[in-house]
Amino acid sequence: MENNTKTALITGGTSGIGKELAKLFAKENYNLILVARNQEELDSTAAELQSAGITVETIVKDLSDMEQAKALCTEVTEQVDVLVNDAGQGVYGLFTENELERELGIVHLNICATVILTKHFLKQMTARGEGKILNLGSVAGKLPGPWQAVYHATKAFVLSFTTAVREEVKDSGVTLTALMPGVTDTDFFNKAGMNESKAVQDKEAMADPADVAKEGYEALMAGKDRVIAGWKNSLEVHAANLMPDSAVAHQLYEQQKPIEKQ
Image 1: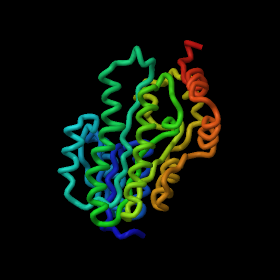
Image 2: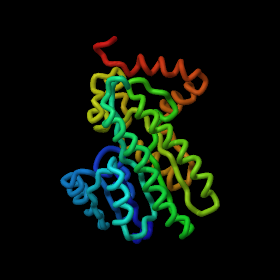
Image 3: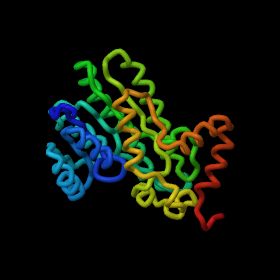
Image 4: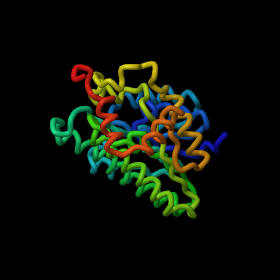
């Protein structure tokens, strides 16, 4: 068992992959700081996890608001041994038709909040000479994605950013890991308005968030640079690497377009 004085801060930790990661850290006796927008969901998750005998602190923040992201950094005074940047959003539709402010909010959450939190807690970790950061990327970060152009681009940023910063701090005792899931059975697609997409019609093909979280947790603890969750997703990424980006984009355009536009 890990020393129970260790603490993991998890954004988006009340549902999906983030909640499953929280369960894994709780099982290993980590105290938790959970950050999300909904107090009721935070309270419910905390009650569920505290039965493991750990301390669960909850903080309500909308991390698409940069001032709230910065405020989180100043409000957390305890030592954070593991940072998990899980909170993320997408929006479905053609870029020319989607609402600008919604897409900017996605950029702020998926990119800017990740940069803000990583910079703040990484400085503390490198000063101590130990710590771990898990950034939620996606196989989307390796694939140009029509119908989700902004989301895919934000995940490309997360992967590049994580890889570069990892190299910068490689001798510090701190590791950064990118978890790259594929289509996973979470509420992401509902919130993104993607239920009519061809890509999400086969629910049985979706990955279990608990399985994805387990792969990410194990890669994080092993100090790996990245992990593509699921062999099918790994195969898809490797196949895409052999194709021109334009061909990948066309393929995804067909895979992700709405059913009614077939």
